[in-house]
Every structure is written in structure tokens, then in C-alpha cells.
Image (cartoon, rainbow, N blue to C red; front, side):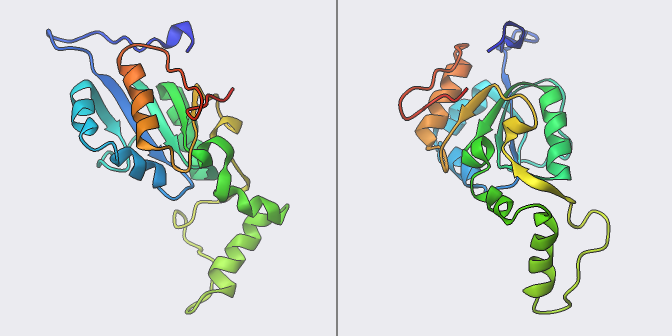
Length: 197
């Protein structure tokens, strides 16, 4: 953690400071978020120490400013993913590549094996060749974001502060990481909780 990325926040009106936590889901299966929900009763404790300000599990439409930590699940597959990731990095102190798709691009990157122009061949296969009714490429803006030429892990697009590997990371690994942050420590991931970079 860099010196200017301290997690200390100023309490307001006598209340203890709460960590502003976000989770985000790019190209992946949502298994990392399912593992996050497997924190079970620790989620109640976490709710007392952190404010979940953005996540697929809450109804917030725009990524907020001044986020302390964001767990970013999934690979960067399309232009919408990339633009949102730029915004997340700009508005977040600590960005965590959350799970193997975020760390390595994992299964989401299988289309990279198709070579140059793979985005077009994937769309052709999905919307034309395997369609059971009305085969056609989506033409209305906003239906399918333009695919990037290749799928990338998060760190190939923006700087990442921590890597939390696993497919998905087990709940105890997520808890260990979050507890260290909540206690004001720099998270140390060793052994099975390996730290990349």
C-alpha cells in the first residue's frame, strides 16, 4: 500500500470511521460474489465497520467518489467494462483484483485463443449460427457493448493494489483480507493466500 493510500478516514459527529467498500462484477460468472456472500455471519460484523457503497447486490446505479476499497470480479471483455474500470480506478484508493478472472482473465479469456478478430466471430456464433429464432446481430445501441479485441485481466488495464486469487477465492481468504484492512493493517497474503506482484 502506498503512503497516500491510507485507509484512515475521519469520523463524523463522534461515530467511528467506516470503510467505504465497493464490489464490482465485470466478465465472469459471479462466483466470487457468491463466495463473498458465504461470509455468512461475518457480513453482519462487516456491516458495522464498512459501508457497502456500490455492488451488484445493492441498487446503486453510479460508481461513487471516495471509495476506500473495491473488490473487482471478472475480466475486462468489452468497452463498457473498460470505461467503468477507468472510473473505478480514479475513484478508489485500493483496487483488488478479486478472483482468477480479474487476476488472469481465466475462462473469460478463452475467446482470445480464436485469434485476431475474435470478437466478430464470437458474436457471429452467438447471434447467427446458434440462434433458434430471428438470427441477427444486435443493432440497437446499448444492447451488447462492443467487445474488445481481446479479454484482459484487470491489471492490464489499470494499476491494481492487491490480487485475491481463487476460482472463487474461499470465504475465509476474503475474510482474512478484509479483517486486515479493517484493522488498519496492510494485508499480507501468504501460502494459499498468495499475493501476486
